[in-house]
Image (cartoon, rainbow, N blue to C red; front, top):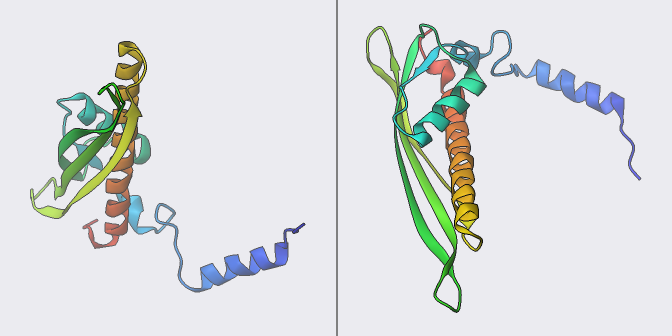
Length: 162
């Protein structure tokens, strides 16, 4: 059985403070400038809505905003499991988001990139269950992709204009 050693925990915290570690969203953190400052393009689809909603959950809603985020979403599906009766029982949902963060004042692209990932869902139940599983997979995929974009923006926040 292991026991928690408070002295080691306190020493590791002091070591982090001594090396210049600053929390990304903490006071003086580079990514704090992203909070309530990124205006996401208006969604035109359910995946776009899910991306915008997750983005605003994590970074807040920008009013009026310092930066603008443009994006393009591509979602495809592949059958990955087929029963002996030749019925598809599982799908992979592949998603790719191409994004660009712009300065609202100058319209200059500050950073851009791509995020891609996948999730899957079962199609072995009823039609209603399959549709519900598909919508859930789409929501999970957009959460993953949005979190990847935010991580990338957080990593590059120190290079963004204030």
